[in-house]
Length: 261
Image 1 (cartoon, rainbow, N blue to C red):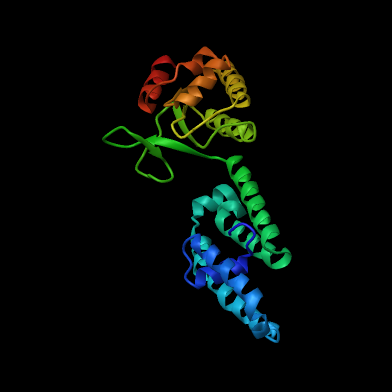
Image 2: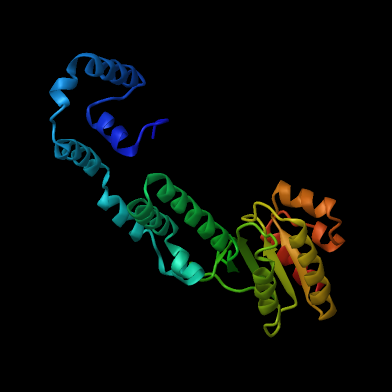
């Protein structure tokens, strides 16, 4: 939407074939000529004619197939993880559409942006925590629910947090780790941090307290495959020495856990 140009004017401009900023100069020149010499031709022009021009241009902006495509971007796993927020693009589009119809273009756009931000915060506060198992043959680790052929490692629970860990989701991460550690026979919990792009100080404190809590119960907490930003925050936030010993691979972390338990 160009500066000082309404959505309908922009639509008319685009449907007329305009593709560059030169169209603004042409429109300005035609406006001046009309005001100077052609106002008589438009004096008795019915407003319905102007409305028809606007409707004919704006109708091209209605894209129902794209809205349907946004609604289809959904899986059962996404629904389990995020509930009604599993279709963020569709919900934000509908919110913007209703906002434009009810309040106008700019308020509608702000409503769509606000809904998008709220959905982003909601989803980031509920990161997917997958349990990993060892694949037969190559020894790599994959999510148990997506790879039924993978198997749990006796005595070790391997979890993968699919998102950043920060103050809004520390309780959820703590609950998932505790649940894994509480299973019979589990002596160590390995957190695969490859898909954790960042942590904050609240997350480091939570991991510290959780590691101490599990250690008091005879269970170890180990980290594997952290990224540079996570390692930097762990170091500068004075994390426990156990957490600073990040293993380069999940396999090495599991082997270390089995040796030391």
